[in-house]
Amino acid sequence: MFDRSAGPREPRFSPADHFDWAALLEAGSIKKALPWHSSVLQYPQMSRTITEQFPPMPLSELTEGIHGFPRLSLDKQLAFVNALVDRHPIMSVDWQPDWRYRRARVLGPTDDPTSVDDIIWNKNAPSKAGRANPAGYPVFYLADRVNTALAETHVQDETVLLGEFKIRPGNAVRVAPIGELLHIQRTGRGWMTGEYNSISEILNACSREEAEALIITDAFLFSMLTSSKDDYVLSSAVSVAILEKLPVVSAVAFQSTRCVGGICLAQKTADFWSSWSVFSVRRVRARHLAMGQYELLDGHHVEGIYDDGTLAWAAETDRADMVVGLDPLWTPP
Image 1: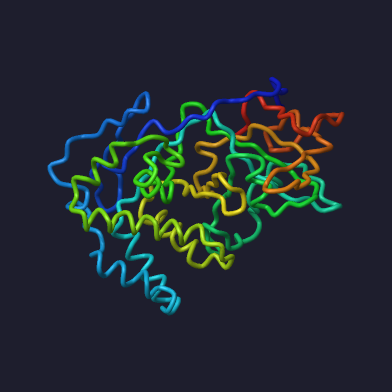
Image 2: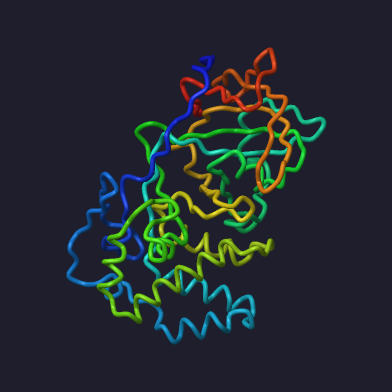
């Protein structure tokens, strides 16, 4: 059976407890975590600089490759991307519970969602190509806000199934936020991880040329993943190269290209239920106002989920902008 909701909630945002980029890596795998508390990053003293441990592509070769990138064949473009990911020390963080991540699915006139399977990935067909995955490589896309999820789904004025998911208490998801190093170097804070001034110290310990190569590589990979082109060949190549390099990473995070300021996660489906749970499901009419802002109308909420994933819809409709959270959170038995 199911438990009824404890009512609307507004959990706080919780960033990662661990920041691993400056730790020793072996074959791209993170060996140590760097705990931080009260926005102060603690990191071990290293006898070698980060670029001595992970030499970047020589600056002249890197800049020549980037300038000539548009003229390369697709095979050579993919080879260049893979070479950069292979050499680049990928930043990753452990993402903790408390915040909710959204998934939107546009419903047709005859669609009648009855199961959790209706709000997750299609388990009965090969995955379609997306920004962070090629066709046949399954990931589950989540967004930090309802507006982000709706914009990423190209909603204008449609009936939508909105699912909200949370990392279960006591669990964490290892996430690689692409472009974080670039943002920290240029603004003094990350777009996901907050203030990390110690990264500047790590970069200052490197030679100027090697530090420039690190920043340029991070910026290039970020630009590839967030390109406005919608064929997704190069953007998905960046994501898959990172996920294959770091098996411990479960998700790639990137800035939304359709909702300014929004964050998207591409989570591997294979280990999704080991850390995630369903927090709420509702059916709404979503109408795009302008500039990524949406109005929600005609709300109908799920008040519980059975063990087999069957959705129990409330008898009456309710406010569309209200979230009815499940207590306890639902996961497959």
